[in-house]
Amino acid sequence: MFCPFCGSQNTPDASLCSNCGYSFSANQGAPVSPVSPDWEEHGHILNIVSFFITVRDVLFSPTLTFRHLKRDNAVFNAFLFGLIGATIGGAANTLWQFLVSIMGFAPEGGALSRWFGTTSTFIVTLFMVPLMSALSILLMSVVLHFILKLLGGADRGFPATFKVFAYAQGATALLGVVPFCGSVAGFFWLLVICIIGLKEAHETTHGKSMAAVLLPLALCCVCAAFAVFLLVLSGISLARFNHFFPWQ
Image (cartoon, rainbow, N blue to C red; front, side, top):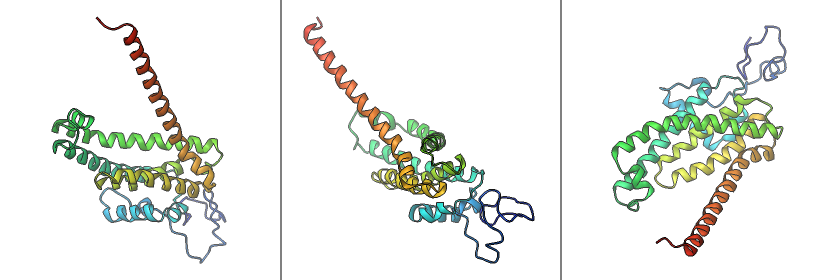
């Protein structure tokens, strides 16, 4: 017998699901809670309708979407969704930067001109987008789950965290198709969806899910500020050295 909520297989005489605790006797004849996102059950690379249904649900109904997240260890569909969305968004963002560079809006000799100034470099960058997207989904899921585990809020295991971030990344990365401001808006939207998603998927508190999402960001900001401080300090030291020992 398969659980109508999480899809796990149980013995024919089971009264409760061994995976999610769904009560077969108490819910007999009652409407079954939907399994979401839609991509969990119907997703494949050619199902465009299911893809955009899932994008809509993740962006605009994250609470309900992740509350009914399928609680199993099958993460391939979630990874595929995240990879597709992140690749499309990353490719679009790369395209906008390339167009800005070749149209002369970027400062001559600047970073955009150096990295996106040639067609060959642009093509190589496009091929790197899927690889970087896959690595970001995996690494960020590990970081989020590690911190949430330390806070005592990761009761559903790593697959739940992985699914939340993969779906959130895939949906918000698509905002990169909007020139210039889309990626920025997508980043902040990603933070909000991850906080809500982790809270619902792991049935934890908002405080723990918020800490799991914001602590890595805060750590990155502290490291960046420290790096800038070191660069400024080294620049001041070098200027003083040149002042006392001018090059001949």
